[in-house]
Length: 371
Image (cartoon, rainbow, N blue to C red; front, side, top):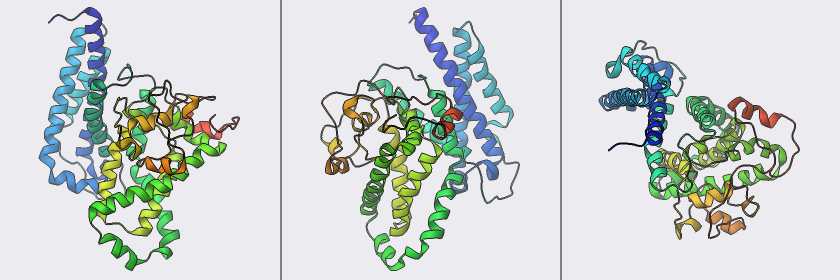
């Protein structure tokens, strides 16, 4: 089949950019293999060792795919920049050891960067949600739409800094709330069926998060932080990552407190973490899934898109993260027969740079509930 010139150029650009991004992930993976005690999260290291050959195979396939995408881009476009970069990154990954790379350091460290978490999560989520948005797209928009670079930086910081963020949340709670822990009560909670604890975690975290979320929309100084999350003008899976560090810390702190006090079983907590890592991305995705009955019980893309709209009819609605019936109970649920027409903030749009968004809440603004 002969492609039209415009279509061929479009595919060449996509292949070059995709190959470049995948190539960066390959090089990151190589450094994780070479310096695991520095760059690999402590919690995940044992799992990687147990399934080492699987991850070596994934890396090998990724390097080959990067090179092929770069080659296609170079052969298709007059400009060889994107494709050439992808090919170079594939060769750099091979020179660093490819799928046979071995650790250069073996000294354990108390803390390490979560570079592995970033690379794997981006790869898995991209493989799941990019095809999903192509198949069931709500709005016609590019994969690399306006603002994707900024969202990727938010994604990078939140993943690579996952241990620092976790310590910033866990330590204060453990230091100041240990007196409130009742071990006998926690033993009864942890003895419940894991599936029941999973739903209990969803409920208690969402009840707390609902009111914290409403506060971020109610008080001007808090809204200045939360406005960063609402600033994308186009919704997709990567837009879920855009969040100011203060916003992230407050929400994780609020969610961890009830979990710490109630003492749920680790298996239920891990199940919740896996669920939220996909669900939080899914409800931001550019998909036309409506779920007509479930949407009044569980948060769906339709439900959360109305929360992100800048249409007057949807402002300050749908605050729940997981359980939409909480909004039904408190009178803030809103899901009409149509989808929102636009997204973003209504008055003051934060800058489209990562550092600009970090600084935005600390600058002087006219404080309005949705400004």
